Image (cartoon, rainbow, N blue to C red):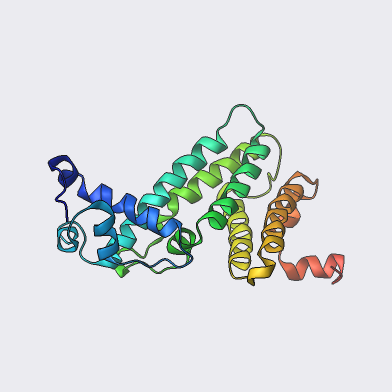
Length: 217
């Protein structure tokens, strides 16, 4: 096996992270081996243990790296000056679903796999939630959904879209196209609710809505 160049050796940690992301992008399940990553970057598997305690440590590091990259993209998207805040928010929701459909293993690694205890905190996803809350705040500045705190709305929207993504990912193979279309409709519905005059209904409990509007769907 070819030895990595000195520059590669200094950047071995970053190379391993990028290699792991590349491998996982082609998979359905968030799993890989240190040997696979080592082969991809041209080093021995033991060399990786100088940078990662074990495979779980590598996967946790990849999770954080992808979250940081996606959060940076969210910030750029929500701050786009060429569209309204509501359009930017909608684009962010559709992009979230596109990322999940394009790289299921990466999505599951971020949102479905439990990190090691010392990393199993909300801190990892906090920047992404903050970015979404800023997107909501920008919509509120335009007069939409002003009855609720931005983070409260952000959590609600994220829960809706995350649930839609998981339903699509877990759908039967022959039903995935329809499932993803339904997931994107969920984003459109959320935006329609935010645009509606009765934006306060978003924050009401299901039981309260049923009492006032009936059980029909």
